[in-house]
Image (cartoon, rainbow, N blue to C red; front, side, top):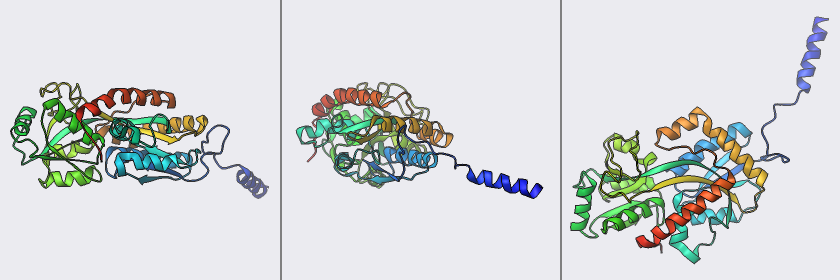
Length: 328
């Protein structure tokens, strides 16, 4: 009797369906791997966001979310890649301020995929302040001394960025414009490559995200001269704000948007927003992003994200044009 009861229980358990993975309402999405195209090179803030969230989504949804970096053209190649895919939610785009806003001012009518009309939006996973750092051999320990060096040596100093038209490029160009100073821009394929030349002394300075430069500042590899925000960051509390450093209009913060092919059904985008939001609440993701100096916004629904990007375009395009920054 006992054996028969145990066998019956075993058959009953075997007949139970496996625990269902979350799916977009009214669909079986996702039922195969999802491709995440990152508009920046590996190692930067957008790439870190994408990989952390991709891992969390893979675990939650039982499908692989695979990251692929397409940094060329300041993110324009990534936009064009995603725009050419079916609007089914299986190809996503992760970018930054540069790819989703600055390029509108840089490329103008040459921009093939506009951030507001060429893709749909999902959410924003983080915000990250811009920090100006110099190599340890640069003869300046304050922004005032830095400004004096550039004024005395027009176009003598080089600065690196993760590419033409990227956030670091335009943030530095904005700073130079506000200072009335000149320096030579050297574009690289990613922040990490630019940073290696900064450490080697081949470039003088670099403007990049706090998440990227926090550890090098703490370890003494570079010197942080200014953070382009109204408040100091607890991650690098000794670095003065732009107002404290004497350049109050130097305000620059990048952010990490998630987008999808134009025409992706609203239920899938809403579902992805909800799932990404849950992933961002997990300690392993949230703590890692915060430790890198990011803040994690709330309530960035697909509609709120689009409205935010539209407002950022209105803010930054005039700045890009006034800075005189150009891409070939």
